[in-house]
Amino acid sequence: MLVLAWLRLRFHAPSGDEPHYLIISQSIEKYSSLDEQRIYDNRDYSAI
Image (cartoon, rainbow, N blue to C red; front, side, top):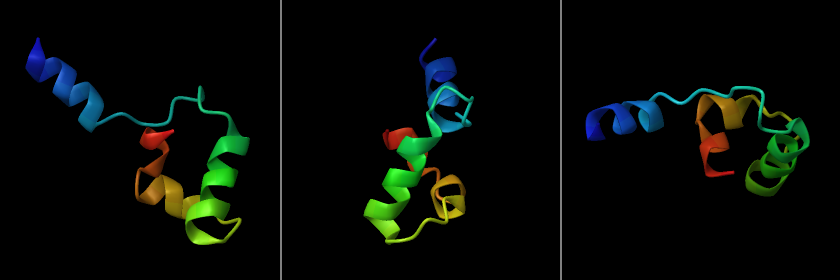
């Protein structure tokens, strides 16, 4: 069960539950840019 929980956390992909405005605001805050691709590339959305 622990392995399955770890795999779920490790390979969690954006599922549409994360509001897009939160991704954009995180991009502005972290990278001072409106380009949210960096958030997806670095998997920073998991921190939201």
